[in-house]
Image (cartoon, rainbow over all chains, first blue to last red; front, side, top):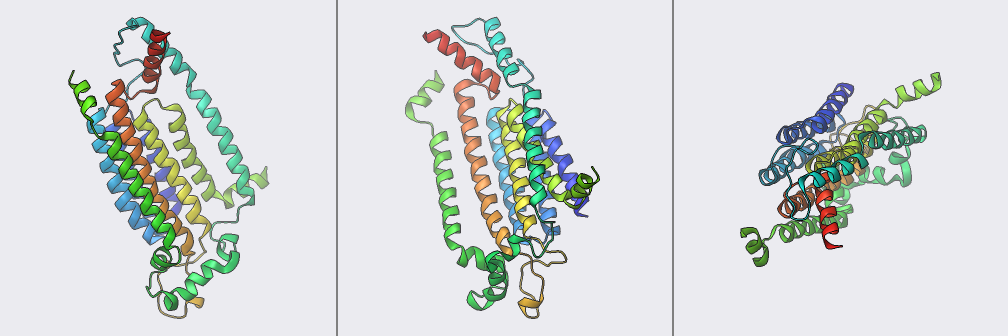
Length: 203
Length: 130
């Protein structure tokens, strides 16, 4: 079952990256997130599944759509956009653009990806098999065992993830809230139209 | 050769995670459209989440929600990676939000969100000033 979901995920990821219409890409990314939520369920990570479905498939998609509303939904082919610049003729601009395109060639990127992939595959040699209850992540310093056996007496909720999130690692959650606050501030400051900018836009 | 194949077979989960991560990385590197880069970043990020959750798995384990019986006797999954990835998902959405805001801002300033065109306009400006 997990294998099927993983195959679907790879297919959806490829489709999201390849499709030229950005609106379609966003929709496929939403489907990818939802499929990811299914996979989390299969991996017994229920809280992660909830969050992925609500935040990944929901809020993320809404954010993308509202951004596309402002920037247009078509991914340009090479040099498809007509640019205007006071100091350069159209031809010069097109030449510079082609040179920049060549600098970021698809083959170079593929080569980098292959090298990274090879290094990561080499790294899996040291990894325990998935599902190994004796793996270092499950046994190291017995911290996971402590959460499982003691959380009910020490904190209370039946959901161990809730106990860890709100109590044992509460500072992490506070840090997360700070990150969201900072991100909201950044978005507000970036998108705020100040007086001079608005006047310039109107010109 | 047989060793390599049997290793890949027993660790096939990791192979899929790496594949997903590379798809994301390729989009970030090779795509010129900035929104496409953000999509790639999202894919890359979920691959990392998958990796983290999978190292806390136990064969035949159950979701870390306390059920009947003593906790010691039930094979609950490791809850710690779940908690860490919950935080990471939310942080990931914050990154997406800031990135999209930057893209909107770039569109306002340059009139395009294609990397090649933005660089061409920058070069034109630089030549105009010198």
